[in-house]
Amino acid sequence: MSVMQIRLLTALVMVVSLSACQTAYYGALEKVGIHKRDVLVSRVENTRDSQEEAK
Image (cartoon, rainbow, N blue to C red; front, side, top):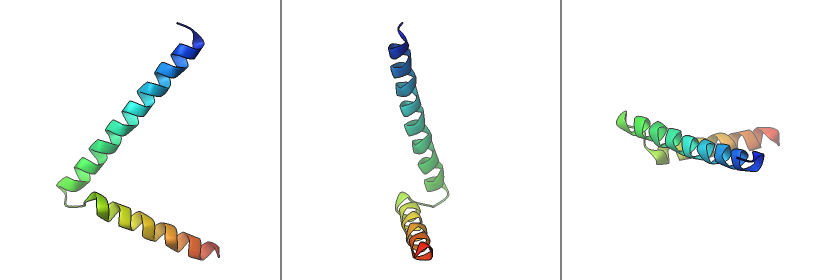
């Protein structure tokens, strides 16, 4: 295998792993009653507050 093929394979494995972790993360949160939309709302509010502080 060439170096480029190894890098491409490594990147592909990382992307698949991260998406699997994210699915497991949201699945675990939903089992305890926290839905994706609640996480999104919280993140948007935190971002908004950070932007206001930066002003």
